[in-house]
Length: 298
Image (cartoon, rainbow, N blue to C red; front, side, top):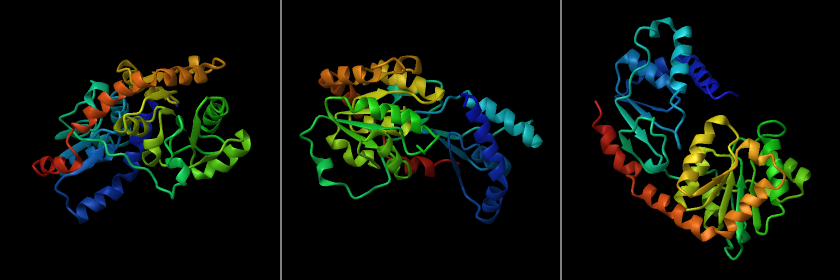
């Protein structure tokens, strides 16, 4: 999918859900509308009902050029929006540490990222931190046979040669097939729960994964699997907390394992740099701290 296609996709979702949201607002009159960065229906409801609108940036932030694509798409489907467009947010909340945030994204206040994952009962060996450990994930949406399954399978096969314990987290629906294809032990592993035994995270560039790694001060190797994830990954690399392999690089034989082993050899340097980002994140106000700010919005 092309980068700008995401703007069109989320705009169409907003249009489809607008009638249902209207009924909710008409029945239960809210004081404020809060919407995620690509939840354009929040701006539509805000404009139509004259409600204050708070926009919450998603994880590392979505490319702001998606907004114009979305506005054009919505205007083509809802002609009444052509004159005034979407409502401007009264308040913009960001959850990304400023040093790795896209400077083009408006942020009025920052809020601390709180890691979360679907939980399972963990095996006790997963909590053993006596091993040098690499955690590999392509996020929560991997599906067999098509949705980034082949992308993750190639990484699993290559990283089985790494001189470290390899933990592979795969959604349960795809885990059994991944095991048959690679011979590796794979299962759903909640990243936030196993993070204390992990030395290095290898992942797809998803904002939730990247921010969770920051929250636990973990070095990262990032192989962006969507165009929109390249720049956020490069900002992490600029801070010295990650290495990035772009598609033209990751396809070179041995490139991934060479990069991973290079980071592991210099792990203390990457840990120190990652710790700086962790400190920055934990200096940000918590969601509890932000509640009073939200209550003051009119």
